[in-house]
Image (tube, rainbow, N blue to C red; front, side, top):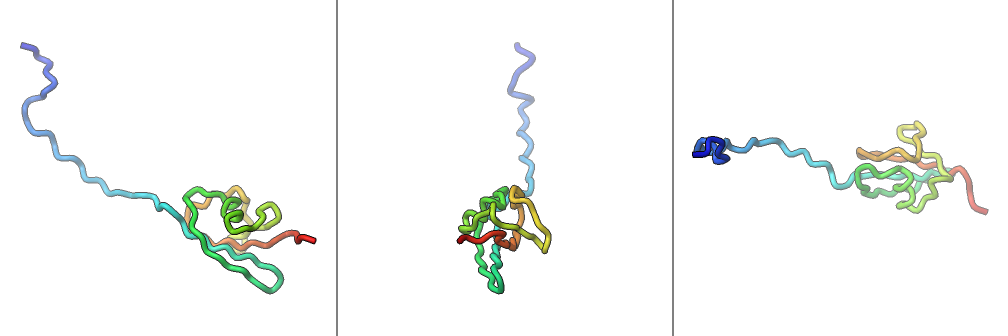
Length: 97
């Protein structure tokens, strides 16, 4: 008789552990406000977690390289990943002519 049987001792296996599920959101709401002179153009969109600010601006139709982007009145880099709901204030730094 083989002593190292893989069938175990015949008892039932323990019940599986129940762990809370923590799923990441599939999209994150972003509000983009483009300020020009005295007017503000505002639009909301949904982006995937980790989307760069630069990519969100392009989705809005804004040229990221010609813009300053603020969050709570503080400038942020265009390569900042978006991981939570956010309001981006965009100030164009040049105008076409």
